[in-house]
Image (cartoon, rainbow, N blue to C red; front, side, top):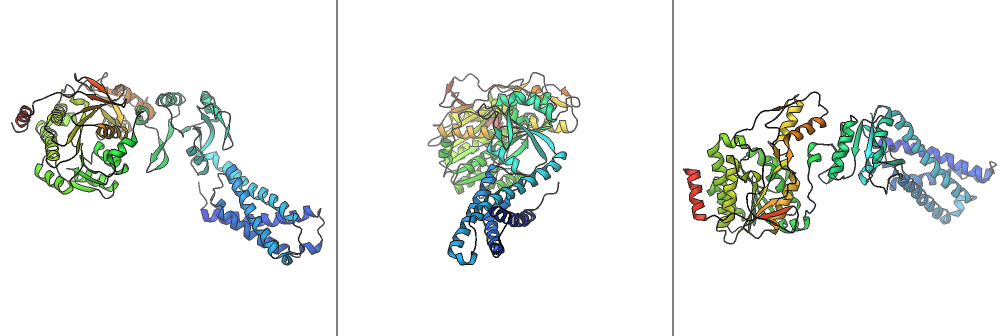
Length: 563
């Protein structure tokens, strides 16, 4: 669809505003004199017209009415048009009384008549253009159901889109049966009827919905063979539409995120993040930037990952360092003198760690020990160690290395440094997780490979998990092992089925079971046998750390790494 440029649209309306203004003024004279105008009153007609036209165009421009797309004309724009006319005609009255001889004779009642005629016809011009052009263009647009009355929904009517909103529904009784942008708002119960009546092919969800409602809504739309479903997302502080994903359906949004506590913890602090180029580390870096860290030092052993996160965060110090290189790490700490260290660096993929056990131990155990030791030696105020549910009764090398790291973090002589571990499960959409893998398999035509029909995992969105990590760190006193509430575990096969439904390919993509991989658990746990304690936040718990004699632990780590 060809869209007129703002300049062409402005010229179009200025031209027709001028023609209409000429017509309304002449009609106002005729109405005033009952269509029998005395010649003397027309002598200064064009003077009056010229001044009024200049004032009207100036006022309409000032009120930014020429910037409004003809696809959107509402009561708000009508009010602005009326105010612009009041402004213009008010100025004309001032000019008239300043120079009365120039306009004499002039019947002042003509102004009042012309004011209302001009508002009416100039307003009708805009409405008519919208109706004519939209009526022509909507034939080829996708009929769309709008779910949710919201300020963002209002903007959808203003913009030129490749869809046409043919019906609106909302779950709030406060707005049902009212009118929104000249369309009646229907009940949620009417969705099936509206889809069948209007031949709706796509849906836009323009307001935040409870997770259970969103899932139920998705299933209802799927039953109606509607797969084009979009929701609102916040990107760089601007709301946009995006296609609904499995992350949106599975996401758990913690009810007690304390952003003020996180901000107090982060603001004006010098923060160093290891593994800053990874899924967790990079998101923590973005969160720290958002919450006002005075400086950010991003450490990673991958040049590419470091470059990627560096492009997103201005003025961050980028340090290409392996955590296994203690001397180099110590140099960085002495240069930066961080107040807070967030340790997110680790080899995390279970099969790779199983096939490369020595390197997994070297990186995850020795590297973590290096980070903790260097932090203590350089007087870091607080160290936050990212752990995993795989550390609970580990059956694989990766989980075992993380459990050793937990034990060291909770038992080392920390001196003045507060050290805390935070344990949580899988995050949705992280690199190497099942969701990107399933997406690729679906796009390639399948089949989706799942290791076991009963395998389950915990899931949480990356931003929410990272915010909870920072929140736990903010309330830590040192020595705690925090556990994030991950909700109920999800069957991986159910996740796979849900993703296939999202793509609308139930008849094309199958699921194949490949058997558990070496070291892979059927289900994960977040607790071993530690007694669980509640914090002031329902999403964060404290597990009593396991005491371990640090001398013996150091000896066992040396044997593990160098033996």
